[in-house]
Image 1 (cartoon, rainbow, N blue to C red):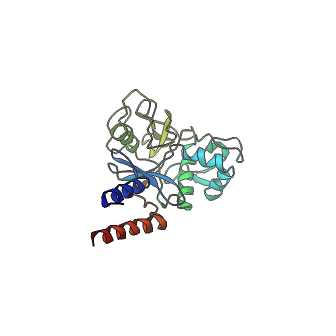
Image 2 (cartoon, rainbow, N blue to C red):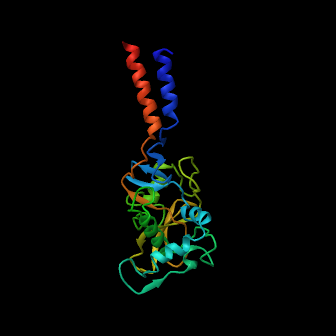
Image 3 (cartoon, one colour):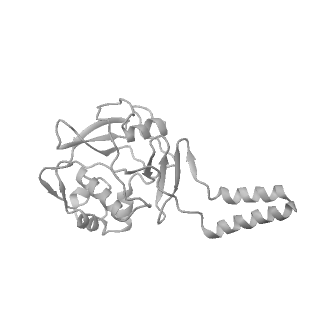
Length: 243
């Protein structure tokens, strides 16, 4: 095999292990096989699954019980107020042993973020709900992480469904919760409507999907040792070739 062919073979091999890049978005694998997507624009990491709670619940019917066991109660308001006792209904189910639809109350969404942090999902313990700039309508993307993703990175169009791309899984044209309360009425919180790219607010007891982010870029799983050794062997072959 000549040097040119060796380089081609190496490129094909490593090509299978490269990250999937879509403009400013890079999809890759985190700890325990978790699918992650890094946004270089927002400098945040998204879960690759846009309806992760449903996916995990379908795979493990005890998920709702474990999330509630970790966060049995939460504040009615973000930092104060009476306590809310979480039940299966906060997780889109009538029974803790029945898989969820993925539609969670705002309090259920907060509890789910707590759960992902407790298991260090994908290698991060900083999962949270996306930010919002607290403006009703189609107004801009600054400070609005879901709006930025929709318009600046997925090239979405106002009034149309969220684009379905190979970068993410299970994107849905529905509303997603943000982590920001509605200032005038803290019984409500902001959300992003992926059916039309608009922002609004809703009562916290209503159920919407949850798409979590972690600040910065969560570390990727290192290249497996066998692949690294194979690459080293090829480099050695190239070195011998030059002699």
